[in-house]
Image (cartoon, rainbow, N blue to C red):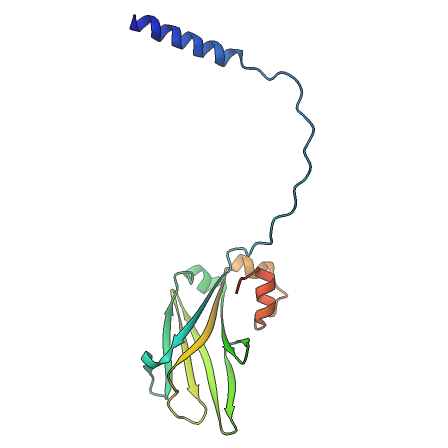
Length: 169
């Protein structure tokens, strides 16, 4: 009885497979859908507040803080671009930069890129030890292909970078 059922199931399945055929013509092409949103080609942005109170103090009266981010791969480090922007006075400015905080003093901000992290530096121009506190930064990681696809962008202008790569705030 089991053999009969198995043979019957195999025959039925074989008939179904063999008898499938394309009958009729293919229908007309449908209407083109709307374009999708502009992508960012794997460009990543990381916004953070850095607390320099727990940061290291260098021998040159600078404070620095390491910010670890796995998006900074050896490929991005060697062929792409990593930009850092500082938020001050309601706008993003590319580092390195300097902010005047009084007639005799200013902040000097810069960064170093390494595989897997960025080192952020803060120094006062008058040689004083930089104050601690929270400071806004944005790190943007741009792979080589994305960078070469946009050769005319002013990467020091965050608004241009944001628009070109559809970055969200």
